Length: 270
Image 1 (cartoon, rainbow, N blue to C red):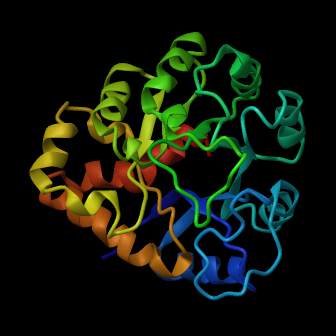
Image 2 (cartoon, helix red, strand yellow; image 1 turned 30 degrees about the vertical axis):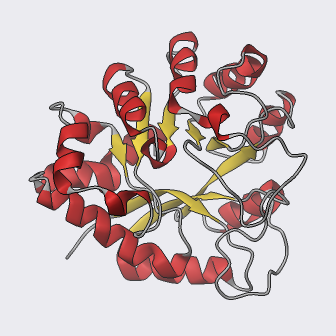
């Protein structure tokens, strides 16, 4: 199947030669651009398939790779709310990051103490990707304040109202809070979602009828984006799973193209 794809959600896996592996996968699958995330020493073993772990890629490493491949990759600068400060947004903008990725905030996303971060992101025109849903790292992280209640999609609602120009993506369609995530996409003009994750993950338990009922409104195809959030070796099966779902929902080729690349292209302003 001929296609053009933009992957809005992909993590740099700390393996030898991973960026080369990712670029080769993109070439083979027709993925034009990928939004890449490097979270430093926060969950450095995420998605490892070909261990042992090599390095610990962070925002600075990401900036160098994006600079080397500006037509293929864009950077989501990683910020852990409650551990980073608003001035880090300035630093990430200076590094050339196209947007911000939030994961595992110490307090709920809607906590007003984080509003200066969102205000800066809005001012810079940096879209924001929010992890939502249950998060359990490969190994327990005592003392890190891991609490998935803080990552519920509903916490994006006050941000959407306070910062109406801030473009936001709810990752994984909320995982266990899908209704919340879909409702926010329907109601809030500046809120979008990806359905990212492994084929045997949260999507696997849902029949096609469930997706049709959840994404029932006529313009839902304008609010959903393709994101992989898997190892480069697993992107193909995840992409095929997305295409299977939307095709069986009866979405036209134009609607599916919106999900695979059109919405991301508009959202990122590229």
